[in-house]
Image: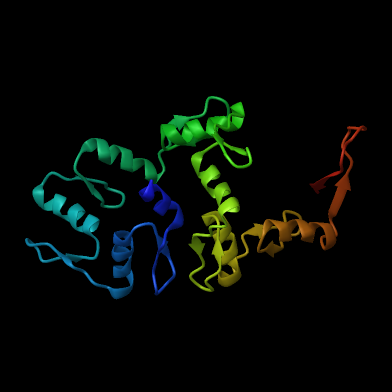
Length: 222
């Protein structure tokens, strides 16, 4: 139970970049990014590595048992592991029978199919909100606990989810990923896009739907 709580609280914090970790050993592994320490040395060729996983991956090549990915060069001890890894490079063999969308794993397909079935098996014990996948529930639980484990490396502001942090980062990068389809203006956020369409774009019009009872106006860009 204690280990489970640590995964949520992430009490170990990097003093350099403020990134947080659930275990002290994870923090120790992360610190080599800043120190440039490379404590793992190959006894056969002398090459050094900062991470034990990189070192082990390298040693597989010397043993002659490595199954090597021709795309990225990563090595694996079995063909099964290599086959599973190759999926990250774009192959999506698991297809949704409803909409045809492809996925790299059967698990991801199963989560996607819940969009069509409406199934939401992950339920919040505190308020009853339901979610399609465990990650959605975990992110929601932070609204109750107040936890904000994802910190901005630029300004230190923290967020409940990686997606919210990613949206925030455009403030620092200057990236404008949203574009008005009518006039081509670039904006930081989808909310800014809608605000622009309402107030600035001369070619934006409102259309009333065919419904007559209890309907609201919808907007279509022309």
